[in-house]
Length: 453
Image (cartoon, rainbow, N blue to C red):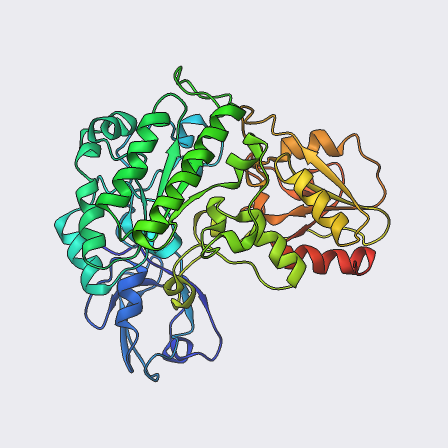
């Protein structure tokens, strides 16, 4: 049974004129009960849509005839992307960050999904261990592309061990089937020191070139480990280990370019920072569509800042055009906070971004302070801005002057709150949040301190 409800309704829209109401439960569309926003979009694409809805608490449903043109939006949004049930993950990966969360945070943070539909809609990574023949048939028939797959290793035994799931040894057959069917797939390898790095990583890169040559891209991502991890075998990369990963990357990018005609392999910005290596420029990347996964993230940010244009974003074009598709997960509404626009400007950011941001601002003639905020809440090697908490920000702001403007990237927020449940209003200094893009930061700085060079 569907659990989708109408979240918002545009006044005067076809759905509004037909009598739909915010809060109505969606029972059927054109006589079918959609299981997700993908099927819903396909059902409403034509003219004259028939909806069956039921008001909250009502015993009887209402039948609505929505008169509209082909492809015209209904004028409503739905409160969920998956109407039946999110397919949760039954792996127990040693490096899963959800297992490294402290108790007492928001319940939504502890949900592990392994749903190919969310992979298509939002760019979430799936291991394919719960993928089925029916899923494959639907992906191919409906051209649900691109998808995002966590490979981690091509060694079947090692993959089963990393995922702590025997199906990890066999589920890459779906990866092969998807590629053979012409589905565009982006893959990732979370590299764990002493587990799937070194010779195991080299074999994975070799196997991908020889066995999965149709893959769109492969992202090498370092293990993120918090102080709450209970895994004795997990640890951060040393600079030498990070340099070794980048050395393998360079070698196999060259091999892939020679054999496949394209480099396919990329490493996240964090690997370069840990290794003490210079970050590649934007031209190094075939695209910056995976910037949100840390691949060319700062290059995308810097280009957006320098050229005053929007950043590339992860996810399929389909999601951007889905009528009614809700923001979900870390794409939920961030929430905004304002602050007085006078006095010195101080930018709050994570420890990884701080030195890069100082250099970028200096190169463009902006004179403002960048404050690196240590992540004491999670600890470990967690230094990205997106995992900063209200507690972390409070620790830094409490010792800062009361005057001026404190600027904060909105990636730290979800629905107006930090990961620990605090809000900007709980901080000891007023902050102004700006969208996490180079363009948005530059526009904010032009307003606050005047245009740079």
